[in-house]
Structures are given as C-alpha cells and as structure tokens.
Length: 245
Image 1 (cartoon, rainbow, N blue to C red):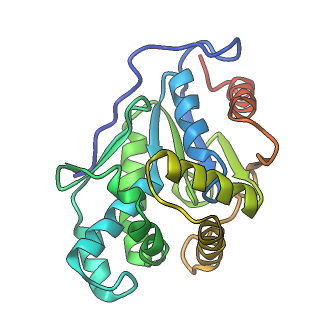
Image 2: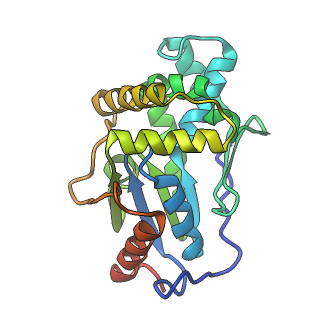
C-alpha cells in the first residue's frame, strides 16, 4: 500500500514569516536528535503542506522484520521488509505510520526497533523499495516537507530547498533522552549517547545512501538554537526561495 497524502486542513500563519501554501519539496536531512521531526512538522503546518517522515518507514519495516523473528541484516530480512504493507499518513497535525493496517507510530520508537533499524536500513534492496514509495508519495502532493537522512542527496536530489540539520553528539543524546522520558520510556544517559554514536557510525558508513549533506544543502547547526529559532530560519528560507504563495 503506497499510503495516503493528507494536507493540513487550513493555511496557518506562524509569526509574520509565512502566509500561504508551500509549493514544491523541502528536503530536511540530518542525524537523529537534531530536531528534524519537530521543525519539519511545524514548518509543514505553517505552510499548509504535507509532511513525510521517511525514518518512520524504515522503522516500520524494521518492526516487521523483528516480528518475523529474522536477523535484521540477513537475506530473510529483505524479503520481509520489501513485502511489508505500509501506509504513511502525511498530515503534519497527526502523522501516522501503519503496518498491515495497524498504527505502529508508538511501537517503532521503542529500543528494540532503534537498535535494529540501522541494519535494516543499510540493506540496498530495502532502500530501493522504500525510496520508490517515498517518491510516489511526494509526487502525489503539491507541497511537502520531507525529513530523513538521504532526502536531498538521493530521494529528491532536485528539491528546491535542501537543509541539513546538525548538532553535537552530546546535545543530540540529551534531546533524545528527553524525548524518551516524555514518552514514558526508561533511559540511561550514557546508553543513549553510545547509541547515538553507534547509529552515526552505521548510517554514515553504509554503502548505500550514506548519511551526508547534499553539496547544495544549507547546513544548520542547532546546538544553540531553539525550535523557534530553527523554524524562523526555515520560514525565511522557504519565503526567500519563492516556495510559498
């Protein structure tokens, strides 16, 4: 199932930066803990656009692999992952990922999926299938904010605006720990930092679509920036590129 593309119900104006709808693709890349999800969703809402979290798709197929009881980095994982029945709801007010009709948005954020997702994501056959699905979803809407790790470099290399968010390992680990605690998950700060470093290493060294900023992406360090600061900059950029009208 290719998924549904739903737009925010009405145009919204945030501050004085945006008035109108987004036309085109904003590609948001970067490692975990940089604030991609938060600012991408808020930007989509501010611009009356759709929102796609491609990382949720990789997490959902990873959950399918774990439920099947096969090794995340083996050939059986490929068969399970590419056959997974996924549905992505791209409404930024309520983004949802469904696996075989089941809402798995909460479950895919758990530690088991987090530990295995890099291995499943590194499988070339899995990436090929999901990139195809992502491009179909993106083509189905007029304006969309897409976040992930290879959006500007692979999925939509001709996106009119590419942004690569970054932050130090320590800041990103602290943010992820805070997210886990807010969601009611028990966390250990040192373990979260170790996992951030592990995922960075795996994602940046995989052979297929490694994590890196596209040559023409704007790199934005969020270490000392609040969510509002980042959102203000993104709104300035989409308006400056003539993407909101």
